[in-house]
Image (cartoon, rainbow, N blue to C red):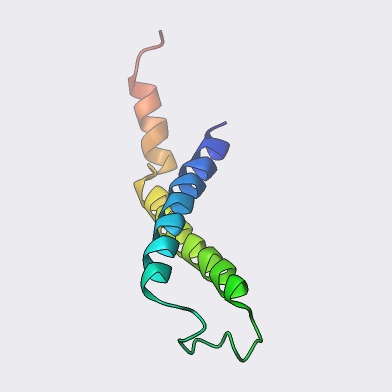
Length: 88
């Protein structure tokens, strides 16, 4: 159950960050007026919004996943800690 909990712990906050980034960026920038390759792909404004949202979500998820990876205790340390604690 811990694996699913970690996945949700990464994806949900990164989804919220992507929502906030989407609102912030596109409140200031019109994707049609800025050349970002969308016109080369013949993307509509909605397509640019959707693509940008998933890019923001991917970047935020990668950041959160790195945090989870770096915060995880090594297996040896977990095993040593479980040997020192008395059983309930």
